[in-house]
Length: 450
Image 1 (tube, rainbow, N blue to C red):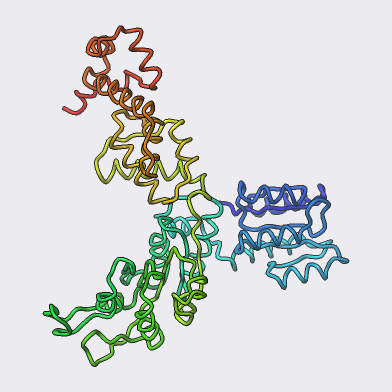
Image 2 (cartoon, rainbow, N blue to C red; image 1 turned 180 degrees about the horizontal axis):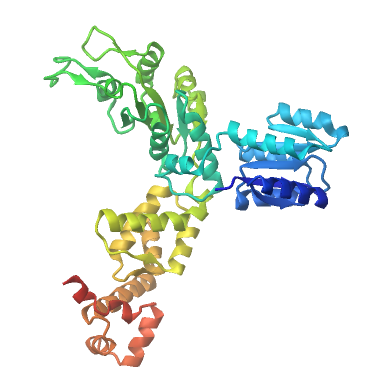
């Protein structure tokens, strides 16, 4: 697939020339005749390189660079500048711009810089990128930026801290980093530090020898040993007891563990990826987390966006979870109505992707039709947030489920269903229309399952 280059310049003639030259080299090019338009195209076009003029009337190239640097720091920016603006271009390169070219420039030189930017910033083939994030469903620009950063750090042995809200997919990202690393053929082991009592945490991580404590009838290999050569994922590390943090720090510094009850230390070789929903900077300030351990874990920090900040991913994720339910649990393939999807996209999602997955499964189980209606989604969202539906909402929900069950029993025969409900056909059709029920979807259903 062609690499995408966004070119921003208020000189229409130059814009056309650059575009034609890059297209002749096989790039997919999109152009903007001003900084404001260029910024608006970042999310929609999702370029892999930005080429921008420095001097423009509305928003200049420096402002474009500052925006990219703050919001998409791994996206390379190449500056085009007139001779008199070279000091500004030099300042931009000192602050992280990839390169600058002085007008008039050789178009072949521009092509070389674009190709160099793609190579040095890790934009290798799309197949490789797809393989890296194969378990992560997204079309969001902000999410793709995180994945790009994660892919770059994967090849190193650097410790990574993922600091994000609960339910955003921290373990999934950690697994992706492991799978793209040189340790991919070794174990990936995870432990939730908040789920293990302090009295057992040392044994789980470091292991214990036989007779180390009451009930230790045999030696136990800890996760540091079991993950030798691979990756150890410390989830919810912010919940780790303060007293145990010093023991973990010693292990990371000395790269060896001493099992509980043993006098012998064992060398370890693991990469540490940790995650927390806490703001560890604040936890350090409040002296609830050791500063020295924080610096040891937080060599590279990644932050997954909450679901409310990637709403364009919600329909994609919802349909992905529907497919998963059909494949892994043998449920009938269903889909959300357009109105139901609107409610999903508009929800606040305090529980993020994990909450969405639960809502999808709940509504799939409760829906008696192939199309999951908005009423079920509304009801599930309210119950999930602790809200009680109003009497009218509960009545409507019951009425719809009742009608759907009648159609199911009669295999979509409206005459039989209306007779069972003791309603005339006209009124029954009106009720079906009100609840968006299509009798044809129920016809032949029983025969299909025989």
